Amino acid sequence: MLQELENAMRKASSQGAMFAKLVADRAGISSADMDCIDFVNVEGRMTAGRLAELTGLTTGAITGVVDRLEKAGFVRRERDETDRRKVFIVPVEERMMEMGRPYELVKRAMQQQCEAYTDAELKFLIRYGTESYQSMLDATTELNGSGKVASPRETRDRSVK
Image (cartoon, rainbow, N blue to C red; front, side, top):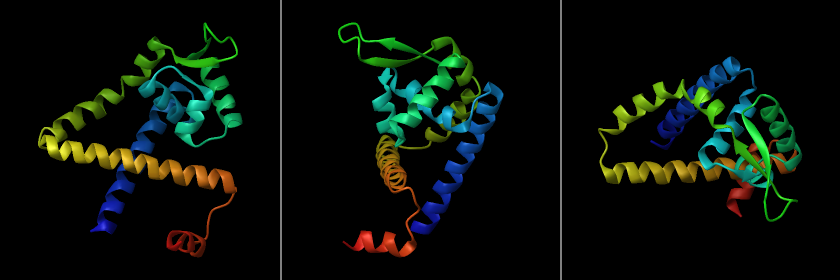
């Protein structure tokens, strides 16, 4: 059953990535930049450091992402009024609404799907999704820090410790 769950989640994730790529292509940005927009859109105003934490990317990589997104009009930089050294990444609402239109198709399908679930099942799915995100973030951060993909033996050895 765990293999079936993994396969189902991988298929859903891959299809979500394909959908996002199509939206990103239509918006003239990369898929990776699209993923970062999603974090900013969901969480709202945040620092580059926070976006780096959420994505597992380095702050240097995030600077490049924010530069591209700002140039494309999806975000703007805003200085903190009390600490001028602190800069926030702020979504540009009009552009986010444009970006969100194709996702209405997904939202409607998910709402219809979720009508069949109980509140307890939905709470479980929220927990599973949140924990899955954390697992993927941990793996991304580890891979990003090591600069290489761990061999199956290294992965197994780490999990035994």
